Amino acid sequence: MADMLVYALHYEGAFNKNSLGAVSEGARVAAALGGEAHAVVVGDSATDELCAQLGRYGASRVLRVPGPEGLAQPVVDAMAALFAARGYSYALFGGGLLGFEIGAGLAARLGAGVAMEVTGVRVEEGRLLAERPILGDSAISLITFKGERGIVIGRLNAFEASEGGGEAAVEEVSVSFEDFSTRARMVSRGEQRGESVDIEGADILVAGGRGLGKAESFALCTDLAAALGPASAVAATRAVVDAGWYPYAGQIGQTGKTVAPKLYVAAGISGAIQHKVGMAASENIVAINKDANAPIFEFSDLGVVGDLNKILPKLTAALRARRDGGA
Amino acid sequence: MKICVLVKEVPDAGVRKRIDSATGRLDRGGERTLNPYDTHAIEAAMALREGGVVEVTEIVAVTMGPEGAARALHKAVSLGADRSLHLCDEALAGSDVAATGYALAAVLGREQPDLVLLGQQSDDGECYTVGAIVADHLRMPSLTQVIKLDVLDGALRCERQAEYGYDTVEVELPAVVSVGDAINEPRYPSLKAIMGAKKKPLQTLSAADVGIDPGRVGAEGAGAVWSGALEPPAKAAGRMIEDEDTDATVAEIIAWLQARKLI
Image (cartoon, rainbow over all chains, first blue to last red; front, side, top):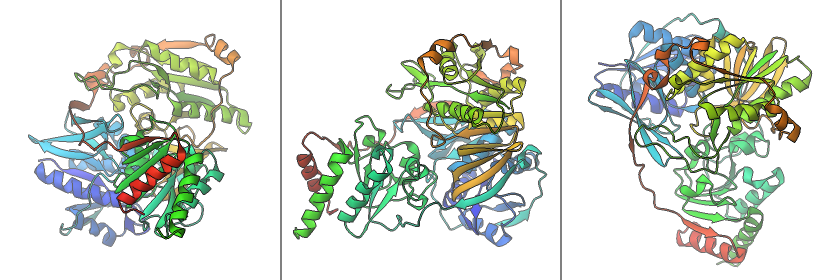
């Protein structure tokens, strides 16, 4: 028998989708190991009612720990205390920034092995086996754990949230935090920089990356999206958003949104894993990049090696002419 | 303020990386370079030194790896670090990320820095995790993926992009902070700095020198074990166009979109 403890991240009265996926995955794996999946929720704003929702996704018990929100180290303290008191074998995280931080801190605290960027978890002969894609997803490593404990950090969107579970008992657990865990303080959380843009409802997305070179070049994407019709929108990579070229609401990837439009046009995007996890499920991917070795070409359906400044204006003009001509 | 910067050598981005099929370890041969994210960490240390808000007494570059890994330290001191430490021991070969963090923390524990900086990820393993592991061993507060860093009295004000938008977090010193590439534009080392780099002190340390428990490192000490490999599901190769005549390229793109009824 081996029980799993799954971390569930919440904010403003709702759970993060990846956390729900992790709870479902944890429940499936725990059942295969003959154990149970419990979820841990840390924060002063989490209500019993909110926590009980995790039962639907497969958690048999939810441990609600009052404490600070949005920071990793208090959660490490909480999970380490629960491991010590209740003998869990595995911890599971749905990915995202906090998942990586908490999972890594917990591995250090427990002296346990950690597998990260995991896209699948299986049980073979009573042992947990984690699948981790490596080298730009060209191979998959199988990871097992020595000893009695292991930490699994999922890749974003790797685990499917499935409803159909039952009731979860919610239990409040008090944890005394380490002194160093309380020496970081959230000043402001979840600030939305830039205007609001809707990219999740669009059938067609034109996404711009650092390869555009400068903020002004973003107009090439905006013009192309306009020429592709009203179902189109413009999105961006994290590098571009951090540089202030485009609003945060339009960001795709690890710390942004996940999309799956009919057509995804990647302009000047190298295709790092952090971006790929947010858009790989798109039906058709067209990539334009001057670097023929860019990883994006390994998962695009149509790849164009060339200069964006030459190609995008002509493509936009051709699409406009086609519409105006009624073709 | 004394700053330690963790750096590592990684395969050059142009090198095709592969895995040794017998051990599952990354084949670390070929052209190598300082992990690009680490150059941002060194630049962040230099920005603190040059910013004038706080007196930075020393910047120490720290790495762990085989003999050749000292090249990453040469680069780090040419970018501004004052001296460097190289943890180099056969016993460390095959360490997983948890053991690597433990070993680096052993070196840092002796140095007693006020701030540990590192790049948020490395080009070879893409781990975001070393900073959090090191911090837990050092019992210091920690934040990863930071893109803005300001000095307050005895603390740092950090900004980063997290799950729900941008967060601002105040972290008391001493602390461990990993930085993203948006934090700054790293400088290029001057010829003089490159020439001078080899004159700056470089100390090589063994695992025993820093009190590392040999049972907790290396392949033996790894808690996560590589136990095989799978082929990823095959994806049909996409069509590629090399743009030579842009009008023809655009016509091809339009035809492709039309054939799929996307326009």
